[in-house]
Structure formats: C-alpha cells, structure tokens
Length: 326
Ligand SMILES: [Zn+2]
Image 1 (cartoon, rainbow, N blue to C red):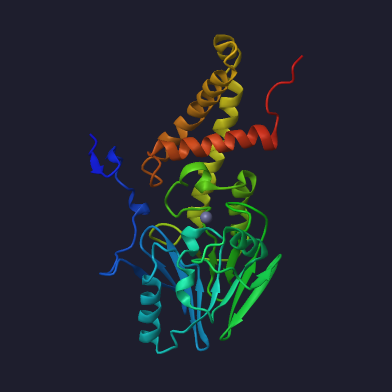
Image 2 (cartoon, rainbow, N blue to C red; image 1 turned 180 degrees about the vertical axis):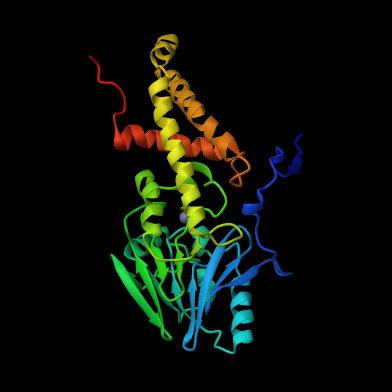
C-alpha cells in the first residue's frame, strides 16, 4: 500500500517499508526537537535523529565539532543547557570541521567571527572553492595531523587519505575513549545511495579498519539517533564485505555476450542491461540478509546503488574490467 502526498510539484509516491529494527531506533527528542547526551565526562553529542554534532565543555570555552543545519540553532540550545547545568562558560571558542560538506557545516556561521576554525587543508581549499557564506573556511589547517589543546583537554585530528570525501578526517578524543568519524558507518543503518554519497570507494571501504585501529568505546558517526559501538562498525564491515563477495560472484556469473549480440549496434543498451543484471544479482542476497538487521536495508535502491559503485570499483580500481580480446 502506498500513500500519495500532494504538493506544488504533484504527487509523490510514499511506499511502506519494514518496521525499523530496535537497534536502529533513535533518541527521545525534547520540545525543541533535539537530544543532547553525555558521551564521556565533558564531551557531549547532539542529535535530531538524522544528524549528529558534538561539543567539549572546558573552563576556557566550548569546542564545537561540526554544525549541521538540520540541528541548527538547537546546537546553541544544547550547549547552553549543558554549560548552565555544569556552571562553565558557554562561549564557543573553537570549531572543528570533519569535512567540507554543507549538510554537516551549514550552521557553522551561527557561531560568530571570533571562533578559531580548524580543519584539514583540503577542507579549506574546497570551502574557498564553494564560497558559501554559511561555511566560513578554517584559518587553522593541517596536512597530516593536528593536536588541539583547550582547557586541559586534548583532541587529535588526523587525515588518513580520501574516503567519503577527499578531506574527511578522524577526530580522536584520547581522554574520552571516543572517535568521531563522519559519513562512513551509520550506527544501525545501511549507507544511503552510493556508499553514503562517497567519492572514493577504495578509501571508503578501508576507512573502518583505520577507525578500529584507534582505541575507543564511543563512536560519533554523524548520522541518525544513537552513538555507535565497535560492534556496529563490524556489522557495517560485514555488510560491505558481503557486497564485495556477491559482486565478484555476479561479475563472474552474468554472461554479457548474448546481451551484446541481442542489442547489436545499440551498445549502450547492452551496457545498461549487462551492468544492471550484475547489480541486481549481487544486491538481492544482501538486501534479504540485512532486512531487519540494519535500518533501511529494505530500501533496495540504497543497497543497489552501493553495490553498483562497489562492483564498478572492482572492475575499474581493482581490475580486471573484463576479459582481454583474444
Ligand atoms: Zn559528507
């Protein structure tokens, strides 16, 4: 059964999906539409059950990590709520950018001009390129790693190669047993389209191992309504590994020759039919296996497009792209 919604652009199809698994359910939001929780000691996270932000309260000021516009002014409300309760300053003195994407930084300009903004050098380059007044470029940048010390607390920032985006960094809180790493693993949910809209498939697939190489107990993943655990990262890795194995099987099994013969001079029709057949064959067992395990697994376009991207990476990055003509 589907429920039509009518708006200015006409009817939108709204199909029904499987119930969200218990492990994918979010936080209880307050009357403003946010939840703020203590991660460990003076490190807090904020969510609207779609996006996540974090902040560290210290005697010298608040350090903010990302400012998703979805949470927007609720970031300030959450900071004020926690700092008032703890009797420390609510002045945001530093902002750390995880990566340049507007959906995680679009509220960055709400925090005024006297904030020290810190990010990777590529984040600065991309933000200067994109020229969005909502996302002031960071003045403090680094190439490989950066140690931020504020109010007796230490945060370790590191760039370990492109993954979701060219500039996405690891944010480690050694004194809080926590890693913040955005847009790769979604706690309890599948990635959305094309491996969470990622630039670099090989980098994306390798990133969870790097994340697990850090010591931590709490993981701030940037999306949805709860913190992640090491087990969540392992389930994500298994989901991706299953797609890789299934894609290899499908690449080896689907015979393109009769498809190309059928379509003759319409080469693109043959390419589409061939690649779609491989993708459908590879994705079907993954969708079946993870429905009820990960939220969104039954929204088949997410797993199908992620499978397509991985299958293409197996052909184009790993190789071979196909047999060599005799
Ligand atoms: Zn992103």
